[in-house]
Image (cartoon, rainbow, N blue to C red; front, side, top):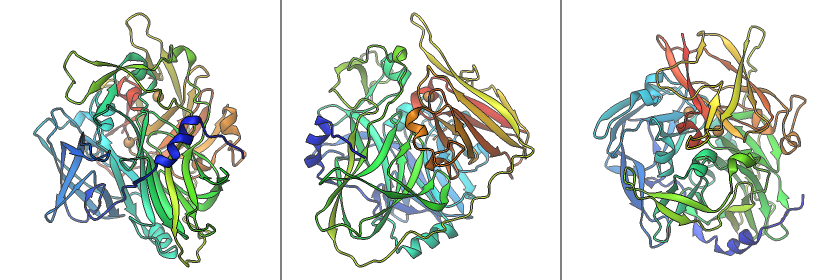
Length: 524
Ligand code: C2O
Ligand code: CU
Ligand code: CU
């Protein structure tokens, strides 16, 4: 498939010189084997994101045995107990949501269980999920977008028999050949401080940045050897969708890779792909094989151009002028008017990570043919529920509102009641006039049954007669629903927790979630 570099990405390629931050034994994004209770704080701190500049940001700080981590990558074994004694050192209330995990809702970070500044919360739960790359981030009422944007997010990796077998057969080592890649787009001022757009248009459409960070590294490079690598890619952006591909720098050919996992763990079989869409909240796991390449060959992980399908009317003038807020400005009346650098409009092509072959290694390995077993959810006795995405266009001085079944989020309303132990099919329909919305279900992993009414760029990727794409083949907690599409998902609402459970279902464009594109559902 042919592709073109845009002028700006062409220029940027040589600038990919900052070593990718990889999980070390401690420090920023270090790996933390959380077999023991962890002391965890949310606090204001700073880090050198751009060389020589100190960026103030919000982070989770963990301590254990005199070691310290910032935004630790938690590693746990399926079946173990996870304990975090959490203290909020931020100037505002927060909660921690363990995205993708099957938890009693008291532990799920529901905004109802807000942790006030200075207060503590004891997060403790058995980890019952499949081996996979989950993640954690705040879920404070109306403040999820702001808090996550300013740094509070990292991975929560669960290992089980299947993932251990894979690591063993491919001789993978976490931190070197098995790597998390956290994709986040942000905006910074000249001194390297975060800027958050608060103007109406940015909030309506979701905030996109003009700087892409991978593991909090701008324009990263990673030196690799001629062997297989496992990448666990998390889209931790507030609103940006990526169309991930691998491109050989020399001739710009797209290289195939194996898709091996989704939100809820390994697929049954590796699936060869040259592109996958990844929307906010979603994860994919890929195997890349660099063994055919020569020394010094360069390969880029890129995002391909696509039609972002933004509603023209809602997009307004698209002018690159935003009203920005610095950290510390909240509550003050003086937002900065900032003529943004012509950044990266959604759907544009840009590089994410430069990979350089630096070492020969004689490892002969191929992806195992069987990765795991996925039992299809039985649908015979399932009931179907309609989920309709719509927009209330606001009007003069009235903000636009994205709605689910006509609802805007209320802390104490439960528009959906589910019977414990039942299986439901949610038929999610997104309006033709809408924009793509990544819909996320708390509490349970689900299966995508089918897609219909998909736009051409998705139809093209269908891998079966159900219109599903490769990323629909595994367990999911977040699914992107394009304008005009109907996506049916199946969930078994069986759980071992006592009494009623209240979870949320929402759009993972965080500005949409905060402005009400969310609802509570109760299981009783
Ligand atoms: Cu990752 Cu309710 O969200
Ligand atoms: Cu979640
Ligand atoms: Cu949305």
